[in-house]
Image (cartoon, rainbow, N blue to C red; front, side, top):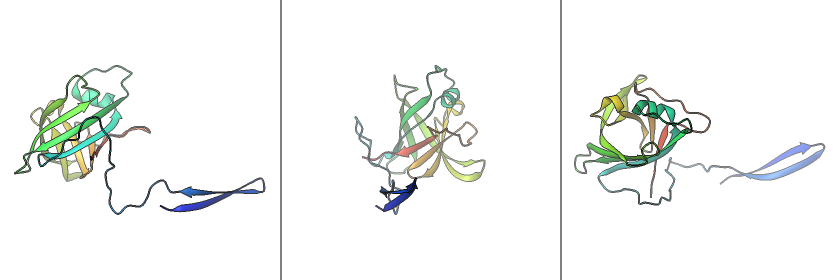
Length: 169
């Protein structure tokens, strides 16, 4: 952790304070550990568990559901499963504020390509229902970007972004 001394001059008086950098330099981007009420899925059948918060209206439109004007953010917890032997995608489980009564579950697949990168890795949730699929661009092993129905980036706002981050125990 770096500590810097910062001094300013106010009306002829010098005021100095020690300032600690808000973030330490790390060799790698390591997901932060979180505390959850329920255990986080793990094992060879789990590709990963991801969570995030983002604006509500665009996702509701994709899912073809109506939401109240008070719905300004969505919170998701996503678990991706794979065949433990072949590592091929199998199912997913999505818990969120748009579907509080029951988890959204279905099949997922790895597809490729977005407009700016035809080789990009994209996860398609509900691959058997393209009219309501969710597209997630794999940024790296720890970050997924939520795309629109044409596989374009979504733009968040000053409070929320369309990203899901890996959750670890």
